[in-house]
Length: 57
Image: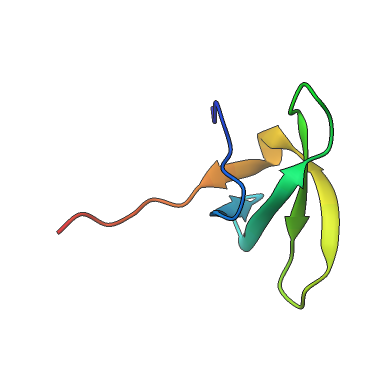
């Protein structure tokens, strides 16, 4: 589970699509505006977003 999402950072939506967090939609931060590929912006539930693993060298 993701505790705090960072504005401007990339996440995976539904484990498939790379999106960028624009801002929280509500005070409880359960919904976020995200920028999709192609520059469209949609609101999604926090549970649908997962952090992108950074490979360690």
